[in-house]
Image (tube, one colour):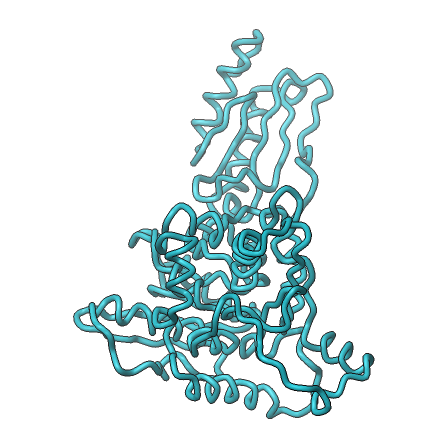
Length: 409
């Protein structure tokens, strides 16, 4: 749920725009497409699986989509400065606090989401303030972005994002409106489950994962070529957001199951269940975003990812040469390491020793070259060598040494 300080209510839905704008721009070579609504999973992928980042949906999370839209649309509609609109997000997730502070989710230093409260913090604040909801006079909601559909509600369950996407994709593939809206194939409690959904002549293969330990196993299986999917949903918390780190703590084992059931029950009780059925979402696109996948939609609803180094230092010198005539660097990041960086390092060291160039060449290791799919990556002087081999590295070293008057054989 997201709310602005200027209103009394949740505004819009939790996953509607995410669903509508999530399927554009991916080619078969980018499959599987991974969901991107869980910031803990996104950070995990940036840190440990950087070569898979092109496979993540470029969609912002619902929280960041809402903040971006609110500070663009409401600022114009209300005629107020952006900095005077405060967006507060109430979330079951502690990682949302980190996400809201990411620099890409701000305009001139003003964040799209100003404050993130967990549900547990919100409950505590309500209790400490002495509020008693049963004693308050009822008021209608302020609804500048309208109402939600069931497709947004079920985002909080593991499998809910996949189901919301299927509700949209199935009609897109069929080319017509379909009566059914529930896809039980992606529901369940297992930390890793697979499903196949056939629409017309197309069969979609999906995987639903909750818990980062399970995510690691699945991604490794995909990277090795053992597993193949069209869509992979990842939630960092077992069971999904209903079991998020910011949720009220309970010893009742049934609590998560009841929360999960509550979202599905709420979905059934709503008049609309698919994001594309929401007239307010269509109005937002018509008035502000033009169409799904437009340049304006990408500005407000999409983002980019980056490889995040696990070691802050730029490099570590592993073969020192105080009077070095040439510096050679080799990337030891995970992707380059798996592509043979260690063996290449040994070959270069052996060659340096064979040529008697120990005092001439300084060899260092870095931990991120930002070229994860093109490793091993070696830097010789100012030249970057991608998919480097022993012969490529030696030839480059010889060229550089020749320029300064020293060369190996």
